[in-house]
Image 1 (tube, rainbow, N blue to C red):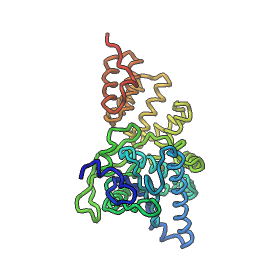
Image 2 (tube, helix red, strand yellow; image 1 turned 180 degrees about the vertical axis):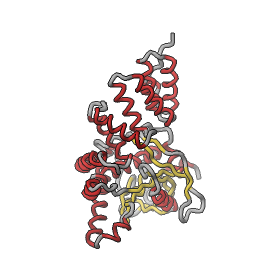
Image 3 (cartoon, rainbow, N blue to C red; image 1 turned 90 degrees about the vertical axis):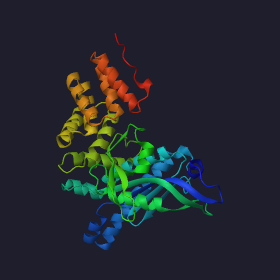
Length: 361
């Protein structure tokens, strides 16, 4: 059977293989909460998670991507099983499907941070309750039901769940992407950075599976997150940044939002947050990029250059870092250095028309 046949959807009234991107999202330490909460309080806790996920998924598919013509049950489906969310996406563009599920996972984490539970935890100085996410892509057996929706079955779904389980051990966003999914998006986008590949042994999976963690994101949650959930995220994120227990992903999402809101400027307050984050993680891509930008805009080009060089050294495949370094070196009258940086940016998915090479005299 050819790859094109496998990737296409089964005709109406027929069953067949369907290449599908799958996202699992689960509450981290939900069993711990269950052991200390009463039945009613725990039920409310799970209900709050489901309500948030439904609101955000509805916004994501019906508002943000409402013009794509995606039909619930066919191109996408949202399911709940106990305390976990399952999202299937098959739009016919698998690389974009994987990327969109990464973006959805990030927006769900933003929305969850702003819940009353996490507000209380952050105000008390405790770490926020977390979500773990796993993304995998592969073929499922799709049965077209009388309700004109797909019933999906297959080992691909089991692997996606195991990827999510492994993501609980993550150190950054706790969003893991499997080998097959990563091959569809690697170096294609400029808004997500991934960890090096690591092999994990998964229960029920004979062959070890390679996974990559989302280490940093430059996806702006504005418009991607339901406004009420976004408001909650911003409130709790600002509070979290004033504690010693914040997760670095919170800084990344907040910094991207603030920079866009302020007319693509890094304020002194946000520059201070970058330096605070760099004291914790000197190689943090979001902090380095925004610290360099704020320093450059303040007129300190020499220091900004050093920060951009730190960024490109730590993240040599991050096109945005090379691009901004090249632009800065142009201003500083270093055409040879600017040329090299811009050529490096082009190797990392930056289009040639975004920045012309400098004239070499």
